[in-house]
Image 1 (spheres, protein in one colour):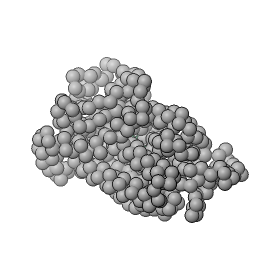
Image 2 (cartoon, rainbow, N blue to C red):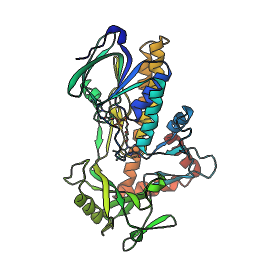
Image 3 (cartoon, rainbow, N blue to C red):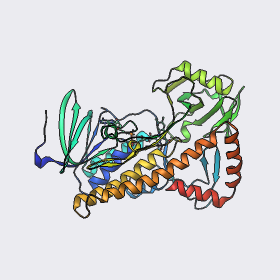
Image 4 (cartoon, rainbow, N blue to C red):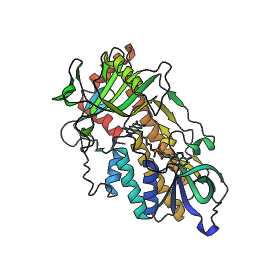
Length: 400
Ligand SMILES: Cc1cc2nc3c(=O)[nH]c(=O)nc-3n(C[C@H](O)[C@H](O)[C@H](O)COP(=O)(O)OP(=O)(O)OC[C@H]3O[C@@H](n4cnc5c(N)ncnc54)[C@H](O)[C@@H]3O)c2cc1C
């Protein structure tokens, strides 16, 4: 077993090299903090996940120079999706900042910055246990089947929704699990079988679908988007599709079979979607959960480990902003400029922000409901949102 000496005690050990852990590591390293990130994955995961960052987190990325020379552009869209509704924000000075970027690219930019500033990333290290005392935390991991032990003054769990760190602390993760299931995939639809007509995607024999938003049908909804609208290097015939329908007895899986994907599309569309190949197919059941606490002594939580949202498009932003707040607070405490109780401020500030995001995302899910309540919500809120000031107010809340 490799064991550290007292002299090699780290300031902060971060578990998880997702967007949250990498942003945190970069900010800590920039403040002169000795930080190591452990991730159990040997390589960065390339599976398509998030497609962009929204709100104040975009400004934080830009402020750190992370977008310079990347060709990535920050948009201030005149319209923004809110569940099945649209926020009409006006053409000038839209309150929302949007950065289209595939998650794996974002992670790569964050990892490069963290390394450049002096953070160490050790892949292939799975954290298996830890104990804390008055001075720090001793962390056990396995790497290549061998045990490794590290010591740090603080440990941060940025280890995702199923967080080992959170569970080890016995911190509850209450919330709700959706009765619906979403099946997602990237599919190749040959040119003749799909056409982009104005703002629509025309599927001969099926009809017109509005891209980027759920198209409601009698049995659920389908969302479709050309992949090259999000990533200019993507092939022109590649589409991102997802269906949403009652879950029945299906379990979510990271390896969704072609038969199940086709059957779901058939049920929702009432016809075959004429794709040739599908990849990165998976199914997910939306959860909306919030950790009971973000801190237990010298161990803290951030990102998906602390909160997960039922509607897409909020999780990465919230994780990045957790990282910004926690990085600033930990650096201040480690410098001796504030006591450990300052870490409670991180918790109260970021828990309040997550509560607001949970409310906004739960509202978006409620708006999607296929029943009379969903219909009533869509009608009334849709009317209110035609008032531009109301739409901008909601966008300001999303901006964070
Ligand atoms: C299909 C899909 C689409 C999505 N789309 C969007 C979107 O459009 N917008 C959006 O905002 N969000 C989206 N999300 C959610 C987004 O991907 C997550 O919110 C985000 O990855 C959370 O970042 P994180 O850094 O907190 O955790 P994660 O990215 O989950 O990173 C956690 C890391 O911890 C590591 N780890 C876990 N346990 C251990 C351990 N014991 N030891 C060492 N390492 C460990 C894992 O290997 C992983 O690398 C999507 C997710 C999926 C699955």
